[in-house]
Length: 80
Length: 223
Image (cartoon, rainbow over all chains, first blue to last red; front, side, top):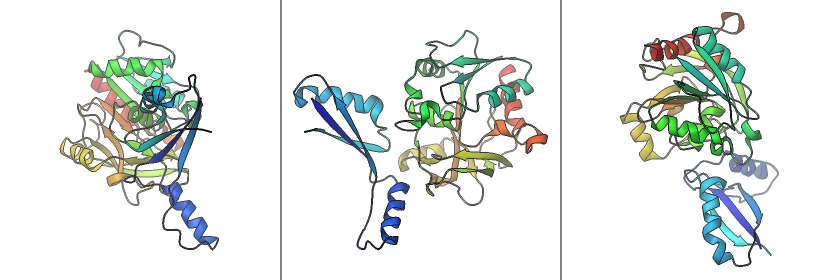
């Protein structure tokens, strides 16, 4: 089973990289970009075939290493 | 007094830190390898140096903060041991939960490497005893992720409990909350800071504003 974990900074945390991307888009002439937030994706190939059965384990992985709960949040989805 | 300086793959300030302690204390300083699951007996201060542990992969300090020696340092800290983390060491201490908050990308998104004036915000009986409160010092900063973030509630606690160790003087170099450059744990036995006092212990290479920092620690623990 392939699982995709999307990690983003919490809304309350400043994202300087997102701001730099937004500025660059603006400088290249793209208008109407109100905000950009940059995150990261971690793909895991995991034994088993039920996301629901593995969800607890994946959440535990996220909380114990993959994210910093003070600044980040995550979502889990099965990858096609 | 015994001081342990931890080495991770990618640490690069370990020898400077070792030398700074050795210069100001005749006591024993030793290197500690990151895979050690326990600390040698008799260690008084554990110091985590700057660098790019594990290549800054995932998040700065994230992988180092889950290493065997950090588990031992957490136990050591919970038993009242003194812990110091400089730059990447500060990031590791935040990542492992010994200090509140997190170090995120500099507001400018640039790596910054230059001298920085700081204010000593708290005269600590161990770490900054030989400085005056509000004294200005100049230490180098060299980081990409030194932007200290902490939520509003915890920030209030840091102020109330006098846990802010150093603030940047003048223009904030990285966007950190409240110009914070370094903080103490609740019991003031753990200190993390982004600037590098170990690079200011010799007048021949840039100044010695950091000398009193190491002398304070060595004198403090010996007494």
